[in-house]
Image (cartoon, rainbow, N blue to C red; front, top):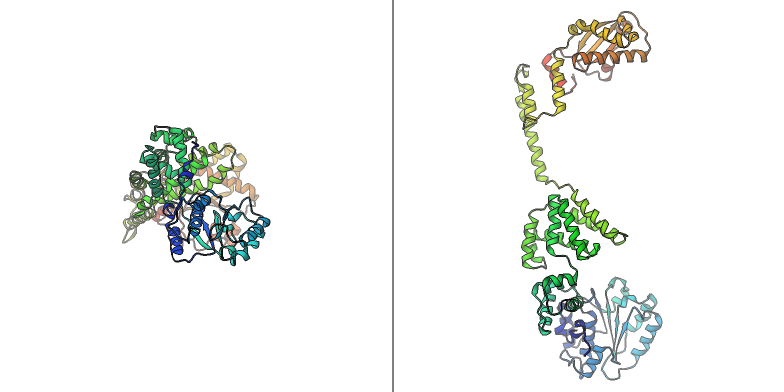
Length: 551
């Protein structure tokens, strides 16, 4: 006897056998019982959820022997002919191959004639969205006012391609994806009837792979039966379906959390061994992240259509994650999907994307960031309050610097640049005009050895003053040195003095004419509010914080 595939053998023959679409079947049953059958129906939804099957069952019920009834006999001649697509009064047409205006004109002519054996002449058009615009237009008039014996039933997977003028003339029914639990229940019934000893875990795997389609689930069951023979071990079912085990998905997320390249490499190797296409792998990874997210929502784990054991795993996994990181990883996978589909080396691209995810920086919780900022502010306020007395700045003999660096460095760690600045500021306490005058000849001799012409220039200047690390040279006479030569000489002198006393200084020159005219130094011209202060402690604080003295 010729083997009949399960999807055909177990195709529903009555409304009760149509699973997962109770909102549709109950409405049709009520319409038949109340004798309120419409002239046109439009069934829309994903593949394999029962659209065409329901259309045939509706045709059987309408053309029941005496009158429309939900209690029709599926084994009657008329019902068997409708189920096989051989009925004279029920025409089933494929919209993809009969999409032109001529085919629709023929239908219009056929529906004018009364039925031969049944009460109604019914036209079923599958994949109706494939009809051309001209064909739809030719159908409008007949669809709106068909003969009393004529009925139309349309089925489509893409309702958006059907013109609104057609939809408005039909009763529309949206078929849903079938829940995994319903598919599991149906497959258990079928496997028991067929005497196949398949575990519930394997049936669940088949149902999940079917993605809401009962027809796909039955086709996959046929595939598993052919592969496994009489032994339906779970590992063999996994191999037959080519699916990724849930343990591998958890390995993927653990590798991300731990920045573990080795673990990610092992995950990639295991994926390659399953033979799963990279595009399907991305879908599985995104679904895994979705499960983690739902597991963390209050009562959200009840929305997960997965096994109870897996729900517990996902609840524990969620505790390790920041939601923002889940969204970020998910977005990377979404962005990669079209690229991988069109890539010449999709698996290589998948590897690089997964390794790239490991370089992701973990998100910072806003609450933690605010707490750190507040803690730093409190530390700084503590430093300011301790660093002042009623008389203003603390005496230089106390532990001012120590307090400052201990406050900003709780562990007592002082950065290298802070050490350098502290050392220089302490050295600057020793520098004054008398000290520079004392070492002036020594400095000039050093410059003379390097640049004799430059050293001679400074014989025309006297040391006028030194304050706030600024040395003023006063010209003995009205000197008119070239500006470039003078600048070069001052730079050499500045470097030598800075090296000698281990601190950075500024050097400026003043001519006699400038003094007579009351000309100010360059820095004074920049900001007239700048003042000088003779308090050594005050100047020390200004130097430490690289500040300016304002009026």
